[in-house]
Amino acid sequence: MDLQTFSDIAPPVVSDPRLPDRAARGEGTDEATWLDWPGMARLPALDLATWLPANCRLVVVAPHPDDEVLACGGLLARHAEQGGDSLVIAVSDGEASHGGRDPWPAEVLGPVRRSESDAGLAMLGLSPAAVVRLGLPDGQIARHEGALQVRLAALLRASPVPDLVLSTWSQDGHPDHEACGRAAEAAARQLGCRFAATPVWMWHWARPDDARVPWQRLHALPLGIAPRAAKLQALAAHSSQLTPRPGDELPVLGEQVIARAGRHAEFFFC
Image 1 (cartoon, rainbow, N blue to C red):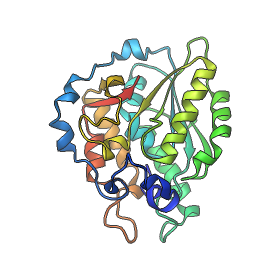
Image 2 (cartoon, rainbow, N blue to C red):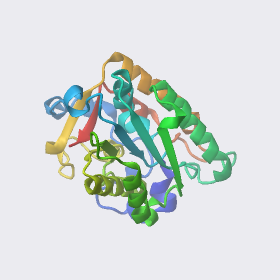
Image 3 (cartoon, rainbow, N blue to C red):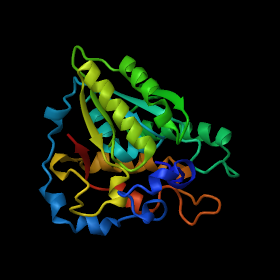
Image 4 (cartoon, rainbow, N blue to C red):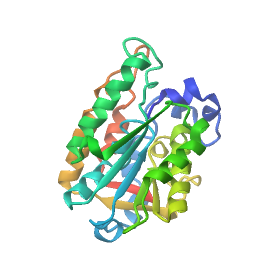
């Protein structure tokens, strides 16, 4: 979930009318505002056994390391608990999150972030064998969107039980997130798999009852104590994102991001 993409790599996104200036930097809409919103309690709840039964493979298309945790770390943990198989497709290595500045030039940060991702996924019950890393350039995924769709289609399976494919929402406000969402949905439709999108940056730039968000499509998946704890432990493995970057006041994963990750439910556009 690399903040630098907003201002350093893709300037047009900052001028997008969906995104107030604070989306480029800062903590965004605070978690207390979301928790006080009655609309959260009105969202329909997903039943895991029906939506993602144990015999269905879960495929998560993550733009950057840590997005798989922020988007659906609790779901990955719950599916592992019920004996289900998961595949995480890591689209980029997140090597640009610190803008190439010391002590994290891209050639150093990429391998570090891959290692952090492996450690975090282990805490969710996944092995390194459950991860495919595509190595597309961080911040430039939209330039490779067609090739990404082809690659994803080759990794998905429609039988004996069609995969449930998850990726970031195609209107999330981050160019990499949006490109992954479009490519993953197109590949899923092509193969006859089910698809759901998950908001990550939306919680940052949107406000309760925001007219730009299709709330009628949003569903909540309750996590339970153990999956929620596993999600927070997995996020803690991403230490490069939890400390301030050179020249910045905030780490990539700031206080409000961590607070949102600790919710008792995860949310999906279905």
